[in-house]
Length: 192
Image 1 (cartoon, rainbow, N blue to C red):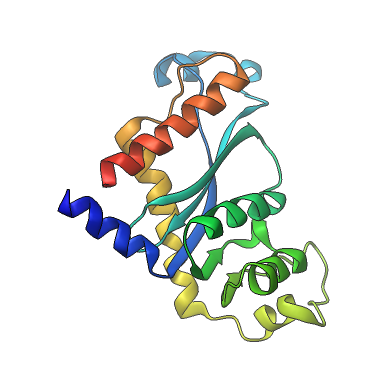
Image 2: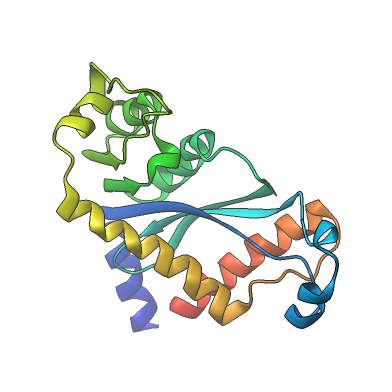
């Protein structure tokens, strides 16, 4: 009981958060069988995609979203950041270029009170960098040393897949999303 109380106190302090997405597998066949099939049937057009908003230090998942992928990560930052900020104060957010948009920076810094939103700039095929706003600040003075800690998001994704499996057993998209969220809850309980 004391351990759980200590974890709760740690989470209530402002957290340094990371956000990332990962794809999950839905095939139950062995890798050998999949590699033996003709190449046209190897492709999977849709798969479950799990997006996680996590505490960088404790690896606790503060908010999660499971949907059918592939899809753009950028719009998923809003609901995840709002859910996580409602639970705990967030001091810093690290995200890859998939979440880059001026709107996401404004949401984090102005609406949710996140002091630093460090999101890698995605030039989207343009040669000219952003000229104003938070994206321009990121492009001009990107904090590489701090951004390296974003690798914790990859570590969390990998840890969930290693401990609880990367392949979902459910067949329908709705059930796969539920199963993915249940795995996240199980992971948090394992950490606590």
